[in-house]
Image (cartoon, rainbow, N blue to C red; front, side, top):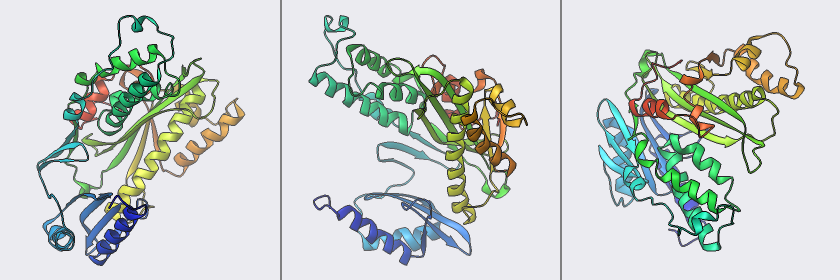
Length: 367
């Protein structure tokens, strides 16, 4: 399959055609996601990743879709309950699903340096050392993007040094490896009754000013998004940490752009979840709640006064329009309970975020 240039595409087209013939519907938003409905009720969900498939559904879905897939294609391994998928360790019962990469994390080791080399902090790395730096960063990036949101700021920050890393950068990256045992043991996705109609997507957005880059002139933003019910029972859906694309001159500017980015991601997630549950990407049945710890941003969005920064007015207008259309409800919280605080600075404590994703519960936070 991997020997020909277009083979993976041809495989996808073949699989897609087969699934459609089995009465599955392809998502309008994500071409790797397929749904199976009976009498307009969701019976099954299937996600493809090249030649790996993960699915969930009823006995009817298994009989009418999965079994027939195994009859047409040679499946090397079919597992349920407790299994490994794309490096994830997955454990499922009737109440929750646990996902972790502990075995993968245990194999990640720091890069060794001589005692003399460790004193040459501002020296550029050799070609071989750069390779080791990039390999270690790649492993940590994969981990932070999949199951360890507490590491995402560290990996993002070290990615900014990727082209010309120094000994100091490598020693700093080695310290990230020491954090591996202290993070969440797993991500917990609790059972949520979608029939109750109390679903909400809650996102926590935060920013930092002038703490990235060699000269500390770039700013960072981060967000974490949960699917939750009215009791705060939840599962983490997405998280991100990145350098803000343009230079900002105030913390208000950074917080505004961070909230705007998080809102955009949350709107997409709501559309995808609405498509799955209600077969309608435009449905607003699921509430959007955005949480910020910037009182200045919170007050500015609610105020009728114009912002003094003209360019920032346009960014605020995007958020205000979403609130006017009843697309999102904005809430304020303290910095101590801002779950995305650790996604924007290495001085912030990640314990609260670790607790939230490990328990699948945000009831003690603003939501």
